[in-house]
Image 1 (cartoon, rainbow, N blue to C red):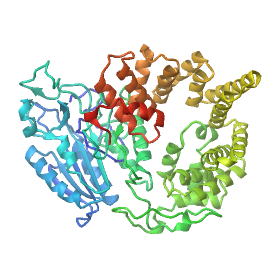
Image 2: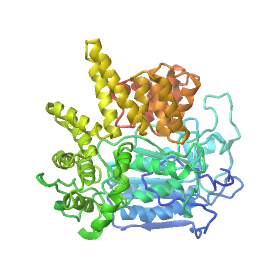
Image 3: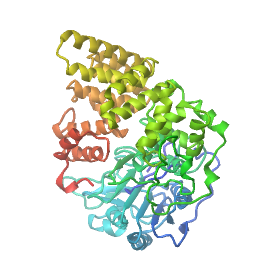
Image 4: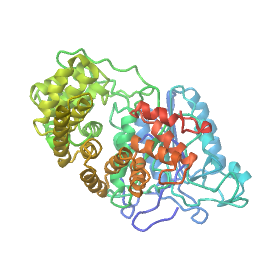
Length: 604
C-alpha cells in the first residue's frame, strides 16, 4: 500500500477475525516507537490450554515489491499483552516468511484443537483471487503465477482452518480492502472465469466470527490521531475495551467499530469502519466477568443475587477490591449523562463508555447509597440485556422500578420497554410510563410513544381518531427530531409523509459524518420505493459500510434486483451475508436474504 501524506501508512491485513479493543490511536510523526524485532514471542501462561491466540504482524516488507507497514509489528506486540490479560496463551510472530508462517499455523492447529477458544489476529498485506483469499508473507514476490499462489502466499482458509477450538473461533483482520492491485499475476486472463485480483473478501463456509478492520473497497489506516501511539486505530480500539469485563461479543464489536470510526474521521472520508461477519450460537465474552468480586456487589434490593455464568476458558481472577472506584468519582462520571445525551444515544454505547471508567460495584454503590436514578436505569438495562453483568430479569426490573419511582424519564421509558417485552399483561402500565417519560421532553420516549401511536392508528377504524393519533405522533416525532433523535427524523418521512423535512434533517446529520443519518436515509428511500435513485445509492452504501444491518439488507436487495446499480449476484451475496450476521435483523428480512445468498457461500 502507499504512504499518503498526512495519513501515515495504510495497513493492509489478511482476513482473520479480530476481537480486540484498540489502545489509543497514534500520529506516527511523533515519538516513533522502537522497532519490534522479528521473530517469535509468547505472552500469558505457557500451561494455558483453554484459550489460545496466534498473532501475526507483517510490516517488514522490502519496500519495493510490497510497501513496508511501520505499525503492524507494534500492533501484535501491544495485543500480545492485551490478550494474555484476557486469559489467552498467545503466540506472537513478527515479519514471518512463508515457511515460518506455515509452521506456526501447524503448531497453532494442534494447540487450538485442545482449546475452548481460539483467536487469530493478522496485520499485513492480503488479496483475493478466484474466490480465494491470500495473506502475504514478508518474502512473497510481487509477480506470481496463478499456480504459484499457494506456494508463495498463505491461503486464508489454511489460517482459519487452524482455529479448531471446541466452542469459539475468532478471527481479526487488520488490512486494507481498497481495490488496488496488490499482486500481479503473470498468467492472468482478464476475461477468464477467475476474474482479476481484488480486495480480501469473506471466507467460505462458517468457521467462526471474522472482524475486518475496514469495509470492502476502503483502506485501513496504519495510524491515526490524536495520540502518538504507534499502533493502528483498529488495534488501539481493541486494547481500549479489552479491559472491560462482561461485554458480550456482539456489543463489543459495535463499540470497537464506533471507536475506530471516531478515531479516523478527522483524517479520512468516509471514516474507517470495521465490519463483522459470522455469528455465535451462544454469548461470548472476550474479557469474562470478574470471578473475584462478590455476588452481593451487584445484587439489587429485593431481587435474588444474579447467577454468574458458567466459568469460561481462561477467566481471570483478581482481588475483589481491584475494580472498586471511589464513590465521588462515580458520581462525577454520571454527571455527564444528561437527559439530552441519554435521550439520543443508544444504551450499548452509554454503558460501554461508563464501564471503561467505573466498575459495576461502584455503579451499584451510586444506585444504592446515593439512590441515583441514572445509575439505577443503567443497571436495569445492563441486567436486562446482560451487558457487563449476567442477564437477570428480576434484578433488571427491580433497578428500573427504583429509577422510575423517582420520576426519571430514562428509567420510566426503559421500564415501559421492559414490561412490553417481558410482561405483556402490563401493557397499559407500559403505555403510562411512555407518556410520563415523554411529558418530560425525553427524546427517546417521544419517538417510542409516537411509534406506538402509529401502530394504534393502523388498528383504528374511526377516521377522526386515526387523524388525531397521527397528528399527535407527528408532533412527538418532530419534537424528538429537533432534539437530535435520528429515528424520529426517519419517522417523519416514513410514517408521517413529511419526506422533505426528514431528508433535510438526516442529510445534515450525514454531512457531519454520522452514518446513522445515511442509514435512515437508505431506509427512507426504501419506504418511498426509491432505492434506484442516486441519493439512495450513496446513502445505502455509507449506511451498509457503517455496519447497519438494515442498510446491508437493502444493499443486498439493490444488487439482487439491479436497483440503481448493475445487477450482481456476487455483490448481493456479500451484503446479504453481512446482514445475516446481525442478531437484531428482522426475521422477515432474514427470510428474504436466504434466497439471495449463493449456495457456494453459505452463511455460518
